[in-house]
Length: 293
Image (cartoon, rainbow, N blue to C red; front, top):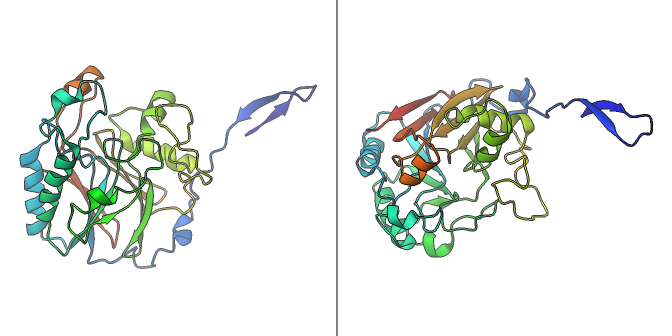
């Protein structure tokens, strides 16, 4: 913050606020290889907000996606889910009327059956979101053992947020609930352009830069939302719309949802963009969106 003090020295008149941001030369700091980032023969698939258990879960599209993982020509080695694998229970008023599966454990059992069909050579990584069976306050821990035991043994469960490294590529996974606060506060931000909101996180070097808003922040001794190590990829969900941008060398991905519009979403004027997956070449970080419908 730059500015000038009043004569009595009790107040500061702010002239400008300089964001920490990401340096333009950060590729060297990331340790990226001269010839690329990760394994050029390796791909990762990024999705979010599956919402198994909802009566608006797009089962046919998701099954088509699972079939694609078994038949695709790209060497897919990872499937990363950025929260809200299931619809949960008691998340918003009247949700019980929009559930196909009213028991949260049965929702996870159903999700596990879908993911069991994913080829064994693809490592599945799951982070929680605000619909999952963990505490609502962030940062959120990984799903509890009672739920993890439902899934096949090779599934990796991480918290929210989580910084992982696969084949030399750092991926920062955050479900993205703080986007509600950022969209409500920063001019010209909208749910239809989630990548722009995520870029604001990178500029601030913080995933949840506001306190006292819609996001409940747990009183931790360490701030887990600070973006200390700059990722190659920032992967979010939550808003149910898609976004794909590059910002100062960081690939910004929001992969949307696998749920059509619910009655609650109609009331809050949220128009989802469902049934998309982001396919990332971990060698060059080339990313494309594929729709399954």
